Amino acid sequence: MNAAPADQLRLLDLADLDAQVAQTEQARRNPPQAGRVKELLEERQAQNRVLGERQGVVDDLKAELGRIEADVLVVDARQRRDTALLQTVSNPKDAAGLEHELASLVRRRSDLEDAQLEVMERLEEAEAEVAQQEALLATIGEEGARLSAEAKAVVADATERIARLERDRAAVSGSIPTDLVGMYERLRTRSAGAALLRARTCGGCHMVLSGTDLGTLRQTPPEAVATCPECGCILVRTSESGL
Ligand SMILES: [Zn+2]
Image 1: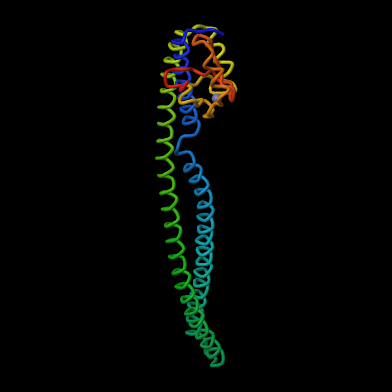
Image 2 (image 1 turned 60 degrees about the vertical axis):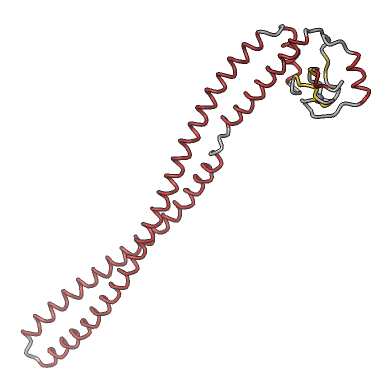
């Protein structure tokens, strides 16, 4: 195919715009925050499980405390009943029995109060651990929300940028003969499409061309469209090509 060297040169602008579109697409699909956001989601799941476990400990301790408190009420009621009975019994044997039971109720009550205190302390610690875990989850949530918002902004910027690049691309593409653009598009599916030959090196595949290939290129007229023998893209020749 033949094309004016100026049109061939314009292919480089087209290739540059296409490279920018591809790069920006990549940024849009995978904003830099995406990895950390994913990590935070996993972290939140794991820490939520820990929170569930800690809340379970709190619930168990509250249930235990409830049982102890119920036992205390039972002991209270027996103490009141026995004390009242003691006023009425005349039989010394019955009185001794009641006194014995009252003494054991006092011990029982004291044991229950010790247990109550111990469980309350453990409950306080467990509740502090829940609060700590909730604070950690809040921190994770805040970072996640901030990064998600940043990622959204990156995606919006990239989308805008791609629209701008596509407009520029349409203008450049429109200024190049259709058959040359067609050739570029075909080659672009498996190579850079078009690249500058600079210092005997193809800008598409970065291979230094062999002496034989360079010899062939030297004999190719400037208006004949040449392709890279290595990668197949259109080789745009300028004074920098080293021919
Ligand atoms: Zn090449």
